[in-house]
Image 1 (cartoon, one colour):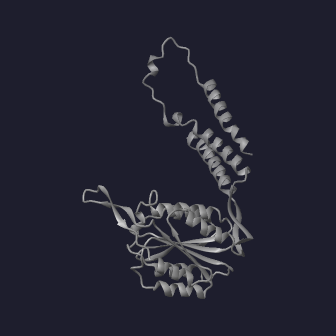
Image 2: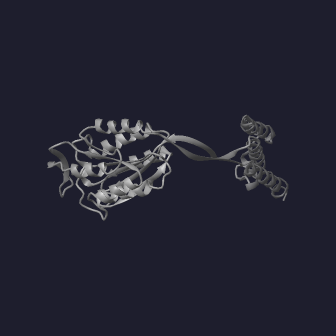
Image 3: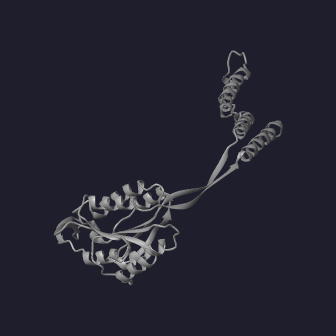
Length: 320
């Protein structure tokens, strides 16, 4: 039906041709006496009634095409597991023993992981000296990936609150009905902040049958860390890589089949993902919405208003 809009340029072209044909011609030896005569407002707007008719025709064509707005709804069942990624955003994640730095490398690997888990509900928790939920469990991975890419260090109080980060992740997943519930906690430091003891948080995770994978991110020895001086210039200094591996192993070991990995490169993360792929999958009911609403009435109203304005101008103002 939208092909009917071809009428619009045809109608405009026809009016311009007819307008030229209807222009008055006066045969006179001189027209100099007409130079001072100015066109009236009605003469300048003589095209207005016809323009209203063209708008009305275009609006009717669009209405006949039946424009709609759509809110989708669909109920379906998918198979997957529930996973919460807990990512450390402390300042030390800016160390550049990973390229371009630890945080960006972790985000890159997590992004590839999310893209490979299309049927899983995945959530995102971030922590440093405090913790909060960035994205609750969802199958809308586009939103999840967008939020993941936006993560930056320095957006919250600095420090490493492992217990708080794990506790927040537990709150996101503990009420899930999935048979398999997993938390992947990535950090590069030692617990030095927070109000929740990491060991106690791990025991609570075990109570809810949550499997915990802890990942220590960082090379062994020293790592280059960027510092800014008073003039804003960046300088690098090698700092010791301190990861409380004993604590991380204890936390993971407190949960059934939980494991600790030392990620000196991206390969360690891939091992975790291979293990998760082998886990038992559970069915999750997902509701997607689909609702269609006709919007043609707005265009019919526009057509009526345009026709009414044409009649008002043509048979009213122009006749005065």
